[in-house]
Image (cartoon, rainbow, N blue to C red; front, side, top):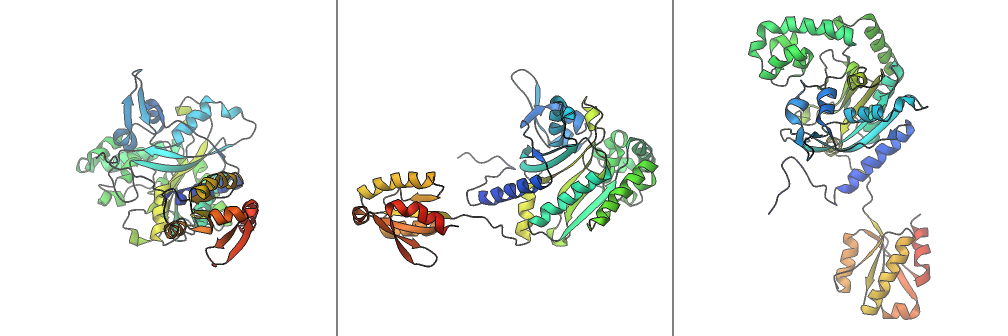
Length: 423
C-alpha cells in the first residue's frame, strides 16, 4: 500500500466545506479592501528565492524543495508567496498600471521541508496579501487592521498583535554592527546557524529557537536605539493610526521576521493563550519590504504584506471551539421504487440540477428504508418517494425532513416548490 508523503495531509470531503467557507470569507474581505487576486506558478527559478528570501535564511538553506528540470535549470517549489508576487509585478510591469498602489492577494499551496509538528506541514496552504507602490504609514495601518479584521471575522478573540520597526537600510547597518560586537565574544557557544548569521545577517540571531534563552539574548542591543529620525517618525505614525483605529498592539523590539527582505514595520499576530504550548502561537506574520523589488532587478518601489496559514487558522478555531457555519446539506433526495421510476429519476435529477437545486438519489438498489437512511446521512432537507403510482398520477409527496410534514406537488412543480421553500 502506498502512503501519503510525510508532512502532508488529505483534505477529506468531511473537512473541505470548512476550507471553502474560509476561502470564500477571505475573498469577500479582500473585496472590501479593494484587493485583487493574483495566481503565480507553484514552481519558480531557484534564484528567485535565493535572492528574494535571502541566502542566509533557514527557508533557503534547509527547507526548499529544489530540483533540476529536463533543461538542467534549477527549479524550486515555492516556499512562500511574496517573492513570486513581486517577480510577477516586475515582469508584467505593474508599476505602469493606472491604479496605484497595486493591491494583490493570493491563496495556494506552499512547500517547506520542515520538522513535522502540530499545525505545520511540508505542503501547506498560504493566504497572503501584498500592497506594492506606496510607502505611507496609513497603508501599513490598513494591512494591520485587515489582519485583525480577518481573524475577528471568524470569531477569534484572544489575539495579540505584536509590532516592531526593523528600520531602513541605514538604521540596520548600524544596528547589525552593534549586534556583531555584542555577540562575537560568545558566538562560539551558539548554534552553527547563529555562527553563520553573525556575518551574513546578525539580526537573525535574535530569531534563534535553539539559543533563545541565553543571557546575551536578553541583553542584546535594541533596534529602537538605532533607528534614524525617518524610521522613528514612520513607526510613530503607524502606531498613531493604530491608536485611532482602537487596535491594541504590543511593541516588541526583539521581533525580527525570518526572511531577509523586511524593512520598517514588522509584525506577528499571536494567540494570546498559554494553553497552546507554542504549537499555534503565531497565526500570521508580515511586514514592509522596501528594497525587495530592486533586489530582484525591478523598479524602485516599496511594498508591504503578510501571509497566514489556513491550517493554523483551522487549528486555532478548533482549539477555541468555534464551529464554522458550513452548509453540508442537499435540497432534495429522490427515493425510487422500481426500474421505471429509477429511469425517470435520472431525467428529473438532471432537470432539477439545471434549475440550481442540490439533489441526489440512490445508486445501490437499496430498499426504501435504506434509501431514507441515505437521505438522512446526506442531510437532505426534503425527500420524495417515486414509484409507479406517483408516475401514473404525475404527483408526489414532498416530505420536509425537519418537520415531517408532507405536501402533494405535481411532478412539473417540484422545482418551483423546492426553490420557494428554500428561500
